Amino acid sequence: MKRKKFLKFLGIVPFVSIDSKCRSQEEVNDTGEEQICKTDRDAEGPFYKANAPQRSIIETEGTALTIEGKVLKGADCKTPVANAIIDVWHCRNNGEYDMQGYKGRAQLQTDAKGNYSFTTIFPPPYSGRPRHIHFKIRAAGFNELTTQLYLNSH
Ligand SMILES: [Fe+2]
Image (tube, rainbow, N blue to C red; front, top):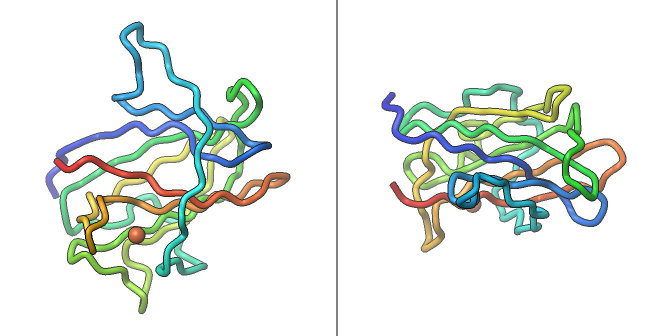
């Protein structure tokens, strides 16, 4: 497996009561300050499957991609959300979702500092859609957030 790119992805999260801080390499400004933002909801799409296995290595057949992130809350987006459950799913290297099994799917849990990470592949674009990874986040006391992370082509 060839490691081609490493992305930092801070944040994700809901709506009104959970804000999030999202940072990618492109979102850090010239002074190195992190941009604060609230994660927007995005379509779940037709390929979500519940009960994905808990694992941090999701898929290995393709170009490797590692994503690290945090789930944060609060008006200042500085409070970590521990034990948030994150479902991640994306299409496989052939552009199709595994609906029979759980390839390209995992469930993660944030640690005490709200961190999560996983390694998978750059999912290919399909049906005219850009590369993307689906996320669904649940945390006690907050509404569920479903969103998507879009990736630049490499
Ligand atoms: Fe999708």
